[in-house]
Image (cartoon, rainbow, N blue to C red; front, side, top):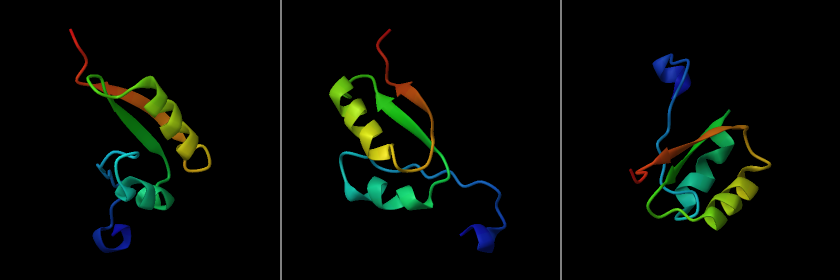
Length: 70
């Protein structure tokens, strides 16, 4: 896709890493990862498990909290 479009960056918005195989299958394509946590449903144990899955993959650039309570 990068060669065809001539893009410098591609952002892939994928399904939950722990919820399906789509996120895991795309990891080898990533140069870096930005993880998004759902503030209403993501549990701390889920975040730790996802971080373990990502440990041998591309660098984790950060974590964004989405749907946080006020």
